[in-house]
Length: 366
Image 1 (cartoon, helix red, strand yellow):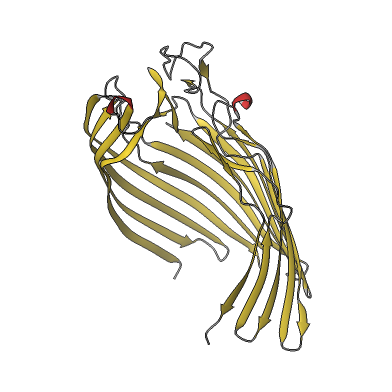
Image 2 (tube, rainbow, N blue to C red):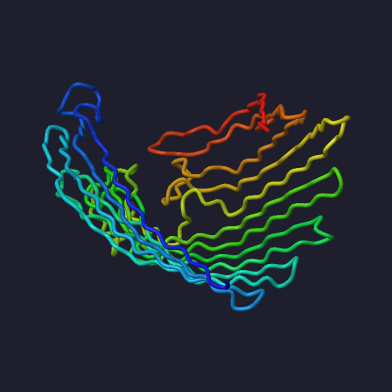
């Protein structure tokens, strides 16, 4: 009938264990006075119930309403020896949330489909380990309100298909990791006191005309981190820097309005292929190209310290041979062997994948 529904429940428990003598930071090794050592356990438990109801209002219009109630708990039973100073971290934090979604799907015609939804989401908070200046507060749960609308269509007797959508995400208590406010050499996770927004649009197309086919994807993204203050732990400073009020100084910066990390404004890729029939076999050469714009690896956006990851352009190709139940593929990626940085963490640069090539064989059982 016109009514559909889903009802479910979820439960998961994990325990993270830090064995004695295994989590050590220090130079030289073996000298407790120069080491930061952590041991103990961090058990976590997640439970939820969820449901969804859909109703076909008309032949082409469907309304769906859903909800999820979540409960999360995290506990630290750990001991830290920080440069000879023993610290005990024995605390728990509990979080709960109800998230929901309302959507409308409108089948305008056989070749046009429209949709729109409003939804809320949730990520639980957690605990920070001590850093010698008292036990830091737990960080709060993060919530998001998401709006999205899109249009899917078919053209030219179904030879061309397109999908476009726009979205807007509004985050509260956005979770970030920065230098500890009182002692910025160490990291701590906290919530931005003002909203963070991420919005943009996406577009895709797929076209097939005989033995030729082409695809393309385009994405544009804008991110705007909510106002808060932080000290870059890479710069010399021991001054207090309150995340909510500063005060702003040469080392205590207002990071409001900076871009979210690893969020390039522009990405696109395209590919072209042709199927060549040789008897009962099919040989398909394909070429693809992808562009990823530049992005920031930290919220401090300090290009002098290497925070900027440059844009990259990646070219790939493959040759498929379909023979009976076998599919054999000769492939290559990053054919120009472009050297680029894929990520930055703790001052380390992680190189992107170099040129790679190989052969892959797949057998389909009847």
